[in-house]
Figure 1 (cartoon, chains in turn green, cyan):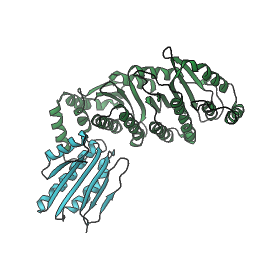
Figure 2: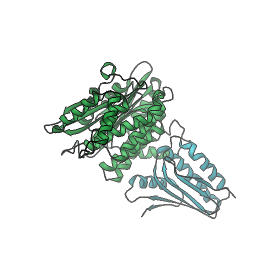
Figure 3: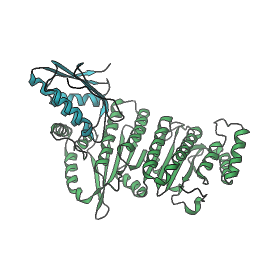
Figure 4: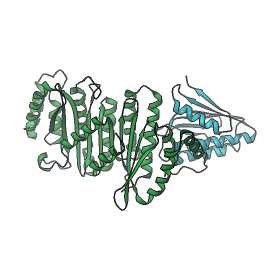
Length: 370
Length: 126
């Protein structure tokens, strides 16, 4: 992942009120936080959907359980444990999308596809009948699936389940499914009005795998929204590295960069919008952030950032300490000390880019490795 | 007597106890509020009152797990206020605790130690 990766994603999801992409481990702790984050976003950003918050949470939980239940472990780097998978939740206009992806053995595809076709062929009442039938009669499969999850997803979403099988290798495929939540209850066929194709989500996942990206989050960066994100990262860090030093360092860099976005981004409405990406490599984490700023702020910012980037470790420390001792009180607009402290903890100078979008706005991105 | 100031720990603010009567002073936990001035102003106000008539010996215990950079500035302000107790002829000391493998908090403690003119001890938690 390099500095341009940020805009690649941002440009594709800029119309979304929220977009969370996750490519990693699915423990209970993490799935709970993903749900918490989505609930927060639904409550605060999607008025027309706030009544559906419970339903969305339920559907997400079902997706996660599918990943954990059906996800296959595989030797190799990308999917180290059975609980790894892909998850996307996005809100565009008044529609909420939930997409999940997990590995499945090729010889199990036929059976799963049969179940999916069956579920998709039924209307609301027929689904209810099938649900009761399965509940009462069918044996529970060895992984506890019994098709109930799929039936429930179709019932709760009121939409057809969209799905794709993508070959991974000669033994495994990636199974993706997508559900939509809309404020209206009428049943809509996704093919007619689906503005966001499941294939687009699959493209994102491919890009995340290729670039070793763990999390991408585009949305509101106010404190309440940041917290679940931080917890998700913290949980992942605990799994990835036993080293407390780097764990705390990454957490610190993330807090500073996210609060920086919250403080300095161009506020459109009440929202403090930005995007961040976290990638992993063998020994380091890469963190990218991006947000919109006003063109008139670019010149001053550039001077400050070039200055910080030009300093060596000793000079950064001295600058940090002198800022610490300045007798001004940190305003909500920031203490001017955060980025200096971030730069002190990187393995290479603070990398940033500013690209002009139009005559009012520019896109500021950071790319840091620690 | 100056009333005790007590804040319970929250998701993004630390536990704070400033108790003149029982001579207990501590700050503990996480500090990463977005608006750190808002959280720390009442604390600074309290200390400014306290140093007008401090106890004979004041010992501040800092046991921070994590703090952001804007909190770092406010914590420095707190230390600066405590430093003034020396001018009143009374004793003051700060103990800074850090976990054995927590380089970040240890380093932050060393930095404060280097720029303060006050007994400041670094203690590795057991």
